[in-house]
Amino acid sequence: MDITKKNKIVYVVIAVILIAMFVIYFSKSTNKLYGNDKESIQKVIKSIDGYKDESVEILEIKDINDARVVGFLSNNNPACIQFTKNQKGNYEWRNIEKHAGQSFSTFLIHISDDESRNSKFMIVTNQENNIAKMELEVNKQVIVQEFSVNQKLVTWIDLPKDDTLEFNYKYYDKVGNLLSDN
Image (tube, rainbow, N blue to C red; front, side, top):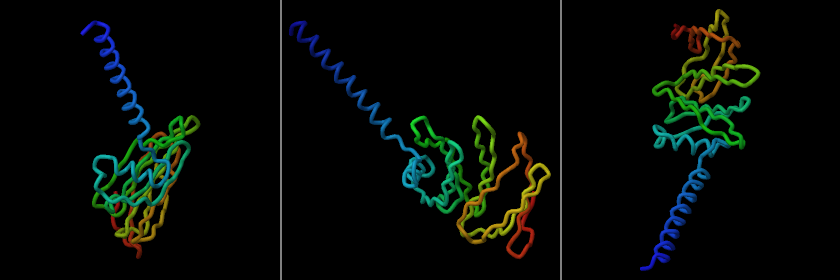
């Protein structure tokens, strides 16, 4: 075999490898999942380890500035996933959390932008929840929030815009009996 044929074969092999790498790179980037709507949010959740084989029931999608926060049930366990809007306007997931074996769960949500830092409590309940009222003390300020019992719900509480937050909770059933406090 002469050198020209060997060179042509080498160039063809290199070109095929480069084209294959290019195709693989762009097919992976175009197949990336985003949380742009309810259906795609479910796909994102199911693509994450620990959630692949679980049932997912989205209860609420809330957009706050460039963040998207989703309260959902994962195998009936309260859960939360947070997305951030990228430069192209797609929502990329950045944090996911679930509280197994609970019927009432609080999630502290931090949303920051250039102007201010917002903190919120997102409470996710399933149909087994028996907490009807929560007294949330935040930095000596008491916030009272009532809940529908035995309902799958997401409830939001705006928190004071302080750098440091201290919390104390009291939970009550539907007849006003204290269930627990800290």
